[in-house]
Image 1 (cartoon, rainbow, N blue to C red):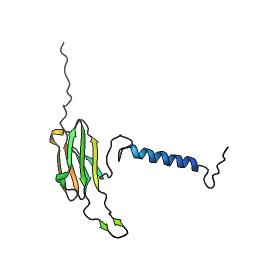
Image 2 (cartoon, rainbow, N blue to C red):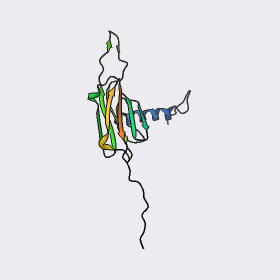
Image 3 (cartoon, one colour):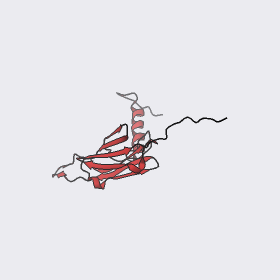
Length: 150
């Protein structure tokens, strides 16, 4: 029988097992998988503000360095998808190192929209590294009282 000794950390073996399992899982999970929604996103995720106003919903996404014409915005079955890719133009390479400070690569975000969103009138524009998506609200049928005739 072999006896193992744990010098500084009694939970070292369990901690190492956790790290190994986490590493193994991350190799097979989609890049940027969101644990709550199980929606695969990407290696980098743009910051997004979502506002609800009286007549519309407003989504503003920070996407610096991406040409707005190269951003794909789609709406299907109540889900709004923003997709694109940022290319790195400035990379500093020297004899012993390579330096890139901005994250680059594809991005992919999805948002479930409420029933009040008017999918036919969605508009998007990009300016100064911010993508703005305007989603107007539909007018819902007003409730009314129906008289029962005798």
